[in-house]
Image 1 (cartoon, rainbow, N blue to C red):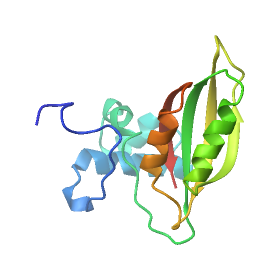
Image 2: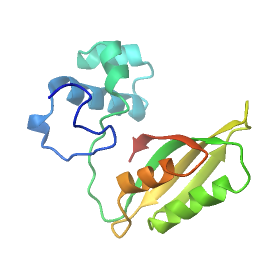
Image 3: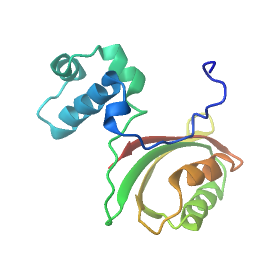
Image 4: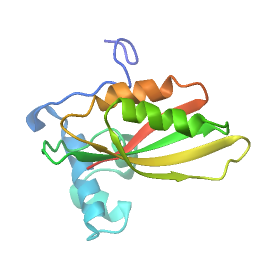
Amino acid sequence: MEEGKGMSDKSFYVIRDKAVPEVLLKVVEAKRLLDSGKITSVQEATELVGISRSSFYKYKDDIFPYHDNQKGRTVNMVVQVDDEPGLLSMISKTIADSKINVLTIHQSIPVHGIASLILSVDVLPESGDVDQMVRALEAIDGVQYVKIIARE
């Protein structure tokens, strides 16, 4: 399959760890070391797990460990939006329509008419599909992009 053809950047898969390329598993391990606070630099984490820093930066936003727990999980995302009245309300409603609970919202001061939102949401077992919610957010007029930055 030609790169960029037939596969969406917005698709998510659950696969067994034995099917995941070793470099991606090492990226997950480096992220775990950094999150633990035992390691404070990307350089040190990548050296410990045996990958290059460029590999870490290339994949760090694309692989997350899967945690299937009944208490829910937190998803953190960045949403870049036009500075328009009512847009935050539409974003909140779209998230609520997915039965996903907003935990926190941090909004930057708009620069050149664009603001960044950092949202933490709680995804419960009865919640809708996160991928579908992201697509719904991206479809809102005035939303520039949505990027998931962490899943816990």
